[in-house]
Image 1 (cartoon, helix red, strand yellow):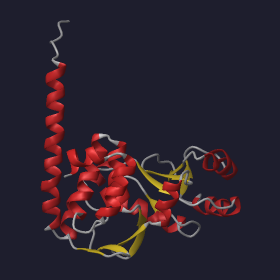
Image 2 (cartoon, chains in turn red, blue):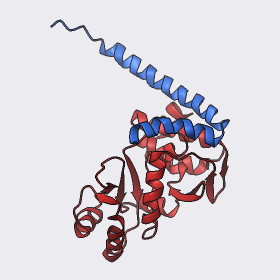
Image 3 (cartoon, chains in turn red, purple):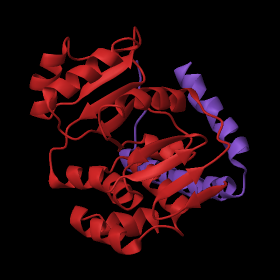
Image 4 (cartoon, helix red, strand yellow):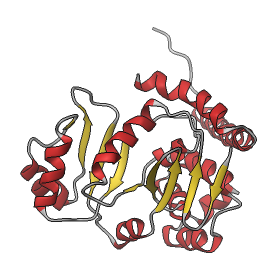
Length: 199
Length: 54
C-alpha cells in the first residue's frame, strides 16, 4: 500500500474505485457544497482496503439553518431520493433537528444509502472539528480521526466492529497518536477490549 | 422429526475460536496490503464490493 500519512491528511493514490467508492464520491461532491461533513462509519475501514461491504455510509453534518438544508435537498433530488422523509421541511424538523438520521439513496434504489445526522453530543462536535482529510486519487474526503474510530468501534462491540478496529489499528499502527487513542479507550471504557482484541 | 442434540457450550467455544481466527486473518491480510500496490489490492477488493453493489 502506497500511503502518505501526515498531521494534515492521508493520501492514497492509484486506487481502483469500487461501486461504493463511486457512490460516496458522487454524493459528497454535492453535500460539500452546502455542509462540512465527516464520514464516521465502517466505510472508513473499507476505504483503506477492509474486505467487506456496507449498506450505509454514516455522516455528521453541522446543524445549519433550514434554508441551507432546503437548497441541498433541492440539488440532491435530481439524482437521489430521501428514503425516510418525503419533503425537506419534514426531513429537517422531524428528523435532523430531533437527531434522527435521514437516508438518501440513488433514485429507485435502496442500498447503499447515506445516513446523515446532526451532531448530538460534544463527542459528535469534536469529530466534525477534528475530521481527517483523505486524498484519494484526485478527490478528497473527510473521515473521523482514527484515534477515535478504533476505540469507538470497540465500544460498539459487534464482531464486525472489533474486526474493523483491529484492521485500522494494524494498518495505521505506526502513524496513530497513542495518547489520544488511549484517552478515548479510557473514556469509552474499552481498555480491556483493546488489550484482548487489538494488541 | 428427530433433531440432533446441541452442545451450546461447545458451539460457543467454536464461535470464539472462529472469531480469533478471523482476527488473525486480518493481521495476515494487513501484512499483505502493506506490501501490495494500491492498484492491485483495490482491484481485488473491488471484486467483493462490486459483487454486492452492482
